[in-house]
Length: 425
Ligand code: SF4
Ligand code: SF4
Image (tube, rainbow, N blue to C red; front, side, top):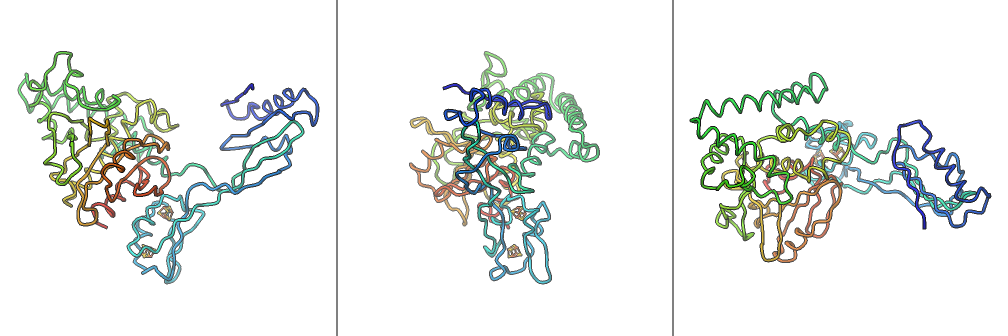
């Protein structure tokens, strides 16, 4: 079997026409002769091949993608929380009732998760139809979205903006005022330069030099497959003892946050820490991108970042969200510390694990996935072995439930925590 794939090209240059011509050529130019040809139109934005090939559908199915919120007026207690939480102004007040504007609803699931009365349903959204059709050159698979339906949410775009800009106030202001990501990057670089100078102001020369080395080594350690902090990334012969004070200095000033390994998922996690094994996160995802010189285009335009930077930015983002809940003083995790879990025997590693509380009494494992791929072997193995009442998998995929595993979109992780783990909303 031969397969020809037209992957991409500048808009308007004739990709669709060329595909139609290839279908014609592959059929030997004979009408109704292409019995062995399969044509697929996989264009997500403008699938227009049907305009040229006039397919006659022989099978027609609904195309379901994402979810849409629906408020039940019988259960709703009119508290208005959903209207305050929705970033897209999709919850409207109509006289005495709250309703969802389906044209504006991005299907993020925040209102569904946080409604105190459980009044919001979150059914799957029918976005269009897909077809298996006959054309004069052979069978064709194609699909059409309903008007106004998109495959990717605006929240994912906002998340990507945040992953580049980060949360340092001056960088956020520069981006808000100019809409230019490079303005934010200039602020990041200024901040990094001033941190570098500050190390010498607040520490003696020898300590300042060690601090600089540890600081510079953090992004390289986060970029590794397992992200464990290796002192050898500072210098080949570096020993932990030499750099402990520098690392502590950075943690005390909140420029970095260590995540300590625990070997047993039992409360309190702090009693199962192995202090010699840890990862180190920075204080801000924007600074992490700047230290790695990750270009705006790489983050904002596509999902390359999630594969090429091996999910480090996504994990850094999740670390910040978890810390933000912990630092809010909810007793989520003693002292706002981060933990991750490793079982050497079964080679199971979970990106984060947090102490539970009254709502979720057992430690909760949290797996951060790159992109929309939900395969999480370690989390599944953890669930089978320890049977926690709740496990969280966070990614760019839509919210859903897989047994006791809750799939929470990355952009909603903070809100999910506040409600279901910290119990603050
Ligand atoms: S949060 Fe729930 S209960 Fe409150 S107004 Fe919205 S739907 Fe009604
Ligand atoms: S699902 Fe998200 S976008 Fe839709 S109404 Fe709820 S909060 Fe708004």
